[in-house]
Each structure stands twice: as C-alpha cells, then as structure tokens.
Amino acid sequence: MSENSAILGIRSADTAAEIDRVSCDAVRRWPEYSGINPVRDGFDYGLLTRFLLWDKVARAIRRQRGLEDSQFESGLLRTIHDFRDVPNEHSRRARPPHAEPFTSRMRRSLRSRLGSLQAKRPRIYIPFPSPRLSQLIPILHEAYHVLIPKVDLCVPGYDEVDSIYVDTGGAQETADAETATAVLNGIVSGLAAQTIELSSEDRSILILQLTRLAYGVARARRELASVKPDAILLHTDNHPPYIDFAMAARRQHIPAIMIQHGLDCERYVLDEAYASHIAVWGDSRKERYTRDSEYQAERIEIVGNPEYDDTMFPHELAEAGDAWLWVTRPHRPEKCYLPSRSVREGVDILEAFIDVLRVRPSARLVIKPHCCDYSEIYDDVIADSDMSDQISTCNDPLERCLSAANLVFTEDSTAGMDAMTRGKVLIHLHFCQTPPVVPFVDYKAAIPASNKTMLCEGIDVALDMDSSTLNTMFRGQRAFLRDHAGPCDSHARHRFRDFVASILQ
Image (tube, rainbow, N blue to C red; front, side, top):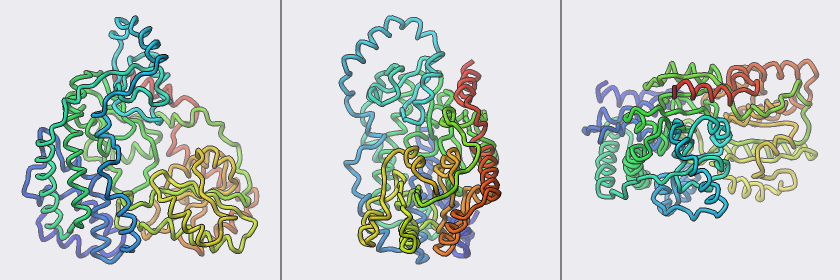
C-alpha cells in the first residue's frame, strides 16, 4: 500500500462506517510508514500498541473532521490525562508483597507439607487474578497446581490456590524509556504519513503508556521464565498487560489459555486473538476469531458461559412495567475506540430519558453505569434537570439491579444478554451513527431505540405487549443465548476443565 493510497483512504471516507474502518486501518498500518522496525527484543510493538492507539486516533479523526464536541471531550480528558500516580497493572508487580494474614500462613504451612505431591501436578499460573476467573478456581484446583503472584495473595476468590514470588528483575528504566521513545517517534511518523496528527495531550499520555508497556513486556518474559508454568490463564488477551503475557508465553512455548468474558461490543477493535488456546461461549465468537484474527489460536473450543452455570433460566418473559433499568456501556473518551462513538452519547441518551419521564410521572429509572462510564456526569445532569425523584444512579451488583427492574434498557453490552437470563423485556439503545454491533434487534430479542422518538415509541410498545408478542421476544432471546452464550446447561465449567485437561495432557 503506497503512502498516497493511505492518504486517499483517509480523505475519501464518507460514511461513519468507512471512517471507522479507516481509523482502524491507520492503527494497524502505522509501522508500514514509520521508518522503524517495530519488533523489539522479539516483541512486535505494532501489535502491542494497537489498544493504546484506538481512542487517540479516533479522537484525532473526530477533531479533523469536526465530528467531536470538543469542549465536552476536552473536559473529560483533563480528568484522565493526569494519571501518573494512578495504580496500574504494570506497576503492581513492583510493589512489596502484602503481609500475609496469620490464617493464610497456617493454611499455606499445611499445604507446604504436600509440596512433593503438588510438584507432580501441572502448574497453571494466573498472572492477573480476577473475579472473572475466580469461579473456575475450585474445578481447576482439583487437578492442577494453580498459582498466583504473591502480591495478589488477598484477592477474593483465590483462597484455594498457592501464591509464588515472581522475579520481576527490577526496573530497567533506561531501556524502557529508549524503547518507548523510539516507538512513539515511529507511531507519530506512521500516522502523519496517513494525515493523522495526535494531539499534544495524547502524545504526552502515550509516551507514559509506552514506557509502562516496555516495562510490562520485559516483566512478562522474566516472570514466566521464573515461574516456569505448564500453562497460563488469562481473562483477556488483546491489551496490556494481558497481551504482554500472551505474546511472551507464545515465545516460550507455554500454552496461553483465555476464556471469553464478554460479547463482541465493538467493530474491528476486538477482531484479534493472541492467546494460543481459547475457550469461547458460543458459535458467534468462534466464527469471528476464525474469520478475522491475524493470529490464529492453536485451538478454539465452545464451552458456554461459566457465569450462567448457576442461573435458573425463566420459561417466559414477565410483562414490562414502570420500574426501568438502564445499563450503560462505557462512554469515557479512552473507551471511544472508533470515530463514530461520541463521548456525549451517554448524556444524549439520558437527556432523551428525561423528556420521556416528564410525561410518565409514575415511571422510575435506575441507571447502572458501566465501571468505565462517567457516572458523576449523569448525577450532575439529573440534579440540573430536577428529576432526582424519578431518576437515580446505582452501583449495586448487576444481579440486584436486574431483579428490581421490569423493563431493561441496554446498549451494545453483555448486560443485555444478562437481562435475557432473567426474563426481562429489553430495549436496545443505540444513539450512534453506525449500526449496532450486538444483534439484539436482529434476533427480535429487543426493541430498537436509536433516538428519542424511537425511545418513546419503543417504551409504548414494551408496555403494551400481549402474550403473543412477549412469546416472540422470548423465543428471540433464547435464540440469541444459544448462539452467543453457548450451551446453557450448567456444565460450562466442566467443559472448560476438560478443555484445559486436553491442553495439558
């Protein structure tokens, strides 16, 4: 691809969908125009940096094309750019280990007596323990020696596993800074050749992120060499610091096992898979990875969603009523990976709700913000609108929020699928220039609402559904679960255990 064709791709894109495609292509292709070799110490920074660039390139294109609300986004960016002292996954390993509680010391002392037995069992290392993986610990611990870093000793859900000191090798600040500077210069040149100019603020944050990335890559290599696991387990693999371990494991011929943790809620940016062995929920994700990922996993297997193993699925949909729940997707600038994603989208949806609720005084809306959404802005908008008696935000667990609602509004979010497992009437909110990614409406599993008028109409439809219409939506939701959540038969954890066993044999 010539430089002229790269420039033409940027300038000739007309539709929002074309602009999104160009944005992702620019992120993929910066090494072609950079004048540097992106491979450093065996690691391809062309791949490792994609996650860091999606939001910045999208923002640059929105700015160049006048697509952004610059004042609103600039205000939000000021709250995230000063992150130097914010804890992060890279720096966590450098901290001294926590003092171990007395009961934990006793438990581990008893375990040490079984050391010879444990040593004979395959070692599965979880470099980043998370709640998403903790539910799999009991079934893995039956057959394997499951290890987590000593610094993560007190993470809830990991009481049954052992911890291990890991060799981080100390900081290599000079080498990290040199790598970060070289890669930054390559990125700036590679994007400039495609007529994309990052803002000075984004370049400032990028150099810090690249320094952390260089450190994280070196740490992953040393850590795996120190632990010498038979396999590692990750809950995601396409962004730092998880991709660092997926790529380091590939280089050291260690199986990197990943289990899906959400739906495909974005175009393009979730296409790649870097783990060598992947357990997916259903056919939909397996098909996409097989079709679109440059890296191909050695094995991809459908296991279902372990989180649904303990779910009692409904036999019909309950009628909608005046207890409404809106489960948001992330709208903060760092989560707007494509130019078509407006950082104001969440506020636009809330303002539409305010108008709807003014003429429905009996209705109450609870907003369950995504953990990466701007809940404080919703609170300000609600206060300014004098609607706090009808609208509120809530940080309760999603399960509790869903139980209390009889009409659920979802964006492109896994939470919409969670609502299906509880028999809720569903409205799919999508105030965006491009079509939705998650096909709730295509399956007739939800009512569409892409603007305020459609939201009003959708609510009217939801509140007036007869038994036949409810049954149609119920069948659509069952079909969606079949294709996207996989077998919902309470055996996903056992299938995952068998998948791991087949790898470690």
